[in-house]
Length: 375
Image 1 (tube, rainbow, N blue to C red):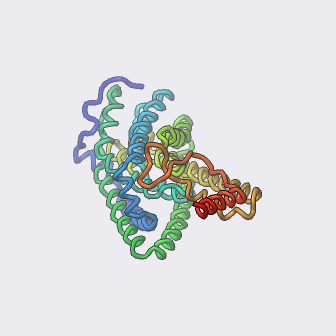
Image 2: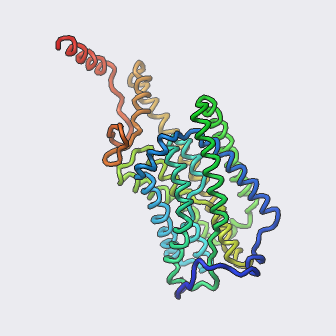
Image 3: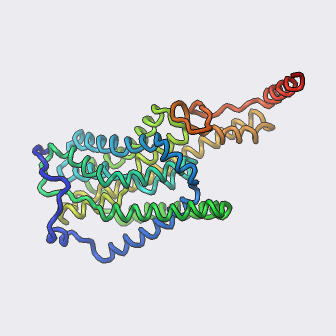
């Protein structure tokens, strides 16, 4: 790795430099279309959010704090260690570090819905990490590039961050209102949005593979990092959430939020900060990272669905007559634990709930009834 000192990691570029790396008109239209699609998707996902639960996360922000620690603590550190461990070239190292310093992407909200995670926490984390990126991105980039010698300054895409916030907050606010006024219709909108979001993710993945044939011939080291980086984010995010006594539902949510980064923000920042010649060595990494994080997300969803189906089959085989009661018990067991309990919640042990035998439940209720009768 090169040595030296970054004079100003967040400096502004000259107008001539900006014009040399400005996006073509069709790229701007593409960004506009993606912003509209993102807004519609977040509106549908916002239909699953309740203001009461959202306010509970803000009032007791344990889950948000853990998520932000993963986002701007673990991910930038992981990117820095990967760049040093693999002895990347300066341009490649910057691309990896910028990706690690970006906030979470909206793709995590879709995957969180599919694994029955905490949607209120997921959307809150995405919004809070985007707001925090206004200060944390330049701070992390400055700290981790102190020992690197950069020929040009890094430009933070504040306009892109602002657009992302608008596409997040306004559609989600409308979704919360629809869920409050028309709860039945909001469920239909949510299901449609989840299906459309899944189709869009598949289209993006296929289009990315087809349009980026040349990127797969790039440095194998960079492809390796783009494969293991999101995996490290998912695993470390899950472990940190587990160590802080979060529920399984929140552990899944924080894990997905940690590994899923905002790819478009990373690409925009690289395009604003470097010349076209330098971008040749850089843009292959965020593209590969985006494809691999999609693949990881689908694998996590598939693994969760298989795990859930296996549990249902085991419960059904053990006692067919108690299958419905076991399902209700499992659905109510996803609550916070230990010191992170919300109001009126009961502490539970993380892990699959053990179904109660029907005869035991009947005997216990009979005992309570008889005790009440004779008292």
